[in-house]
Length: 91
Image (cartoon, rainbow, N blue to C red; front, side, top):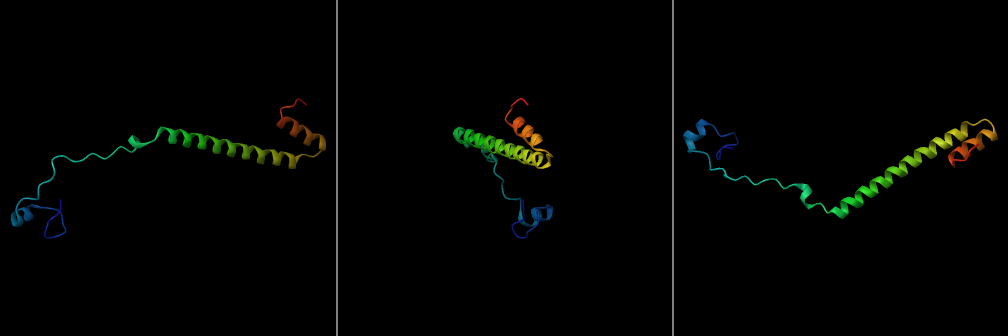
């Protein structure tokens, strides 16, 4: 609560000079809950997109790891084993 005449907090001097502070509303409106207006379909789509992006990022990490393993392989047989392991072939 601020003084009407000056920009400072209401104090006893203000009460003496200007009278009691202006009445405050007895009912303070509640803040709206942001989750009340969430559309379940949009939330499900957002979750699905997040999962897809997450899986793509995981796959890119796997590709990067795969490329680094191929680059570090010394022989063609070792490269073949890395490729076969990628496709779950028994070598």
